[in-house]
Length: 264
Image (cartoon, one colour):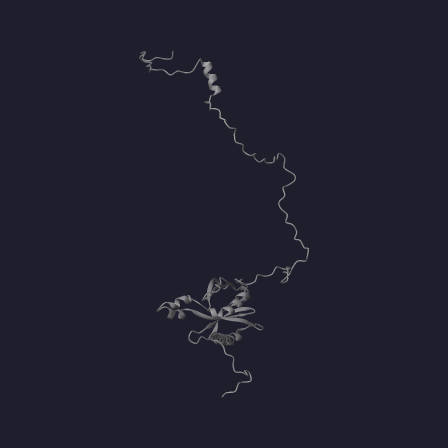
């Protein structure tokens, strides 16, 4: 019979399966970070400090690993890194394929020139675009969901706005404390509505709304329509002696025959 230790007088606490997996995952992440720190430490500048690190890779999407006979070579094509953020730079440390251990420094980007955008929040395989003056073409950096907390810290430190983060407060504005109530008798200022200008422009006439329509009295009949008469045309006809009458037969002027009958 084993005696309980001094640290756990009543025996070690029972942990669920999810908690044990989470602890094992965290120990694995800490081991990778410690190995990467040993590789990166000799390349730091005087006074430079390491802040956060995350595991990442570039290349084909991880969804291709589920394709038969193709997924086995996807990991060989991908390039794996351990990304370390310091107070001055972003260091990409290469990770070996066989041992999954950090090996050497691949490239370094000054922190002021590093830009990140397009992070896919909540995805099974999140990714983001990373660019720098030395790399004009953005590089698609992919991570595993287990490394998402560390990745969000790095992206937030680089100034990338993330969904769900609190917007920066307005300078000089202080929100009221929780549970604040206005003093008794306080009345909010009335809202001012639109007011027409007092001085109207010259020639301005106010618009009069049409009066209400009234039906005609019972038995009303409209006047019959009259044909149109042109007064100028009637005067010209009176001066010429009457209206014009067209000839009844055709007249040949060469033969002189009277095969026609003109106006009377």
